Amino acid sequence: MYEFAVTPAVTNIRRRGVEICEVAPESLGAEMELEAGDRIIKVNGRIVRDYLDFRFHTAGETDLTFEVRKKNGDDWELELERGEGEDFGISFEQIVPRQCANACIFCFCNGNPADARPSLFIKDEDIRLSFLYGNYTTLTSITEDEMRRIVEQRLSPQYVSVHATDLDVRAYLLGIDKQRADISAKLARLLNAGIEVHAQVVLCPGINDGEVLRKTIFDLAAEYPRITSVAIVPLGLTRYNTDRRLTAVTPEFCRDAIEQVNQIQKQLHAELGTNFALLGDDIYLRAGRPIPAKSHYGDYPQIEDGVGMVRSFVNEFNKITKRIERNGGLQHKSGTILTGTLFAPVLRKMVDKLNDRFGSRLVVEPVENGYFGGDVSVAGLLTGRDLLSARERISGEFVLIPRQMLKSDDEIMLDGMRLAEVAQEFGLPVHAVNLDQFASLLTRNN
Image 1: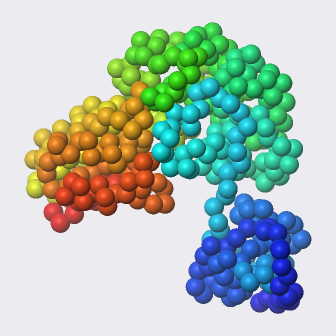
Image 2 (image 1 turned 120 degrees about the vertical axis):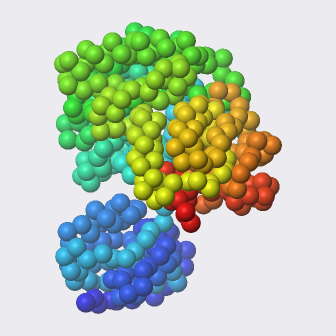
Image 3 (image 1 turned 45 degrees about the horizontal axis):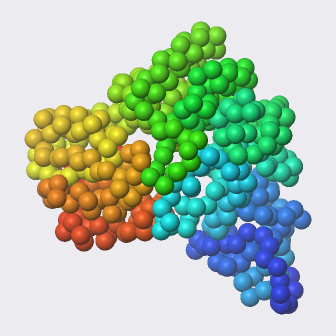
């Protein structure tokens, strides 16, 4: 049950609150006569800035008062008695990212071509996105209000780009002064409040490697388990990165990094019972070294940063193979799987075994990244134009590409080309799939 009062619309109203983008039919939100375009301004007198605020202020509450600005400008006050755990059926607008105030010398935004989608030039530095999606922040420009919010709303874990605990090196990498680069007090405050932190190091040859890296790992490990892990991922350069302070990552550099971190991991595992410092998959692949076993990664704390993703994929692929066998095999399937040059050799071995086992004719073709160039070789950064460059090598009844090539909420690639356009150019169905979809697609109609 709810009651409401209406205040007439006024002009020049400043946009406040969080906008509703969808209300599910027959939901609590629909019963309250909320609509897409309405904005929730306050809950129980507390300001709502985004849907995280809404979720926090309504959690566990059964007696609620909403201040709502209708899309026509009227102000409503709704009093609601809500059943325990009852869902509102409301979807909200996406969070607009807070912008980064650093000038990182390795920032990937600096490596974008001029015609890249505008969204690729957004340098986000947002503790909300860190909590929600694992985006990394540097904490250099975090406000007091944001610090309080992390603690109050338990926005844990937080993912922090440390890069180096040596302040001179960190300031150099971030393009800021040492005072701003020093986040030790902020980090301690979060850790003391029970906020879990995962750290990241973007490894730049000649800058934060060697003894600087060793110091960074052990400084962070001193806070284990409050700092749960540190991911060490290699610098990536496109053809558009022209900063002379940066040196490209080489296979030899990757082999040296593996040797150094292996020794550190042995020591930390003996002391802490965990490897703690985990290298990105790119480093093993570029070095030509095997990917570590599942036990190496524990709970895969930073898999979204490409740390353990290949091992997880291989293990899941083996399970998928058994599932395919249960569903009748792939005897009549033929098609082309396009992926990045870095992962193609790994995937080809697995697919060749699949073909040998089931008599299918699936071909893995590596695709060079001509859009970004440089040493960019991962599948997720391939574009539509890159795919079209491989058209002469396409065979079979269909084409498969990794789902991560597309925008999360739309079938569009980094260069703005749509999946349907690529399919039209190939003259074949093109499916963007994850592993589960891969199995379902290949066993369909068997």
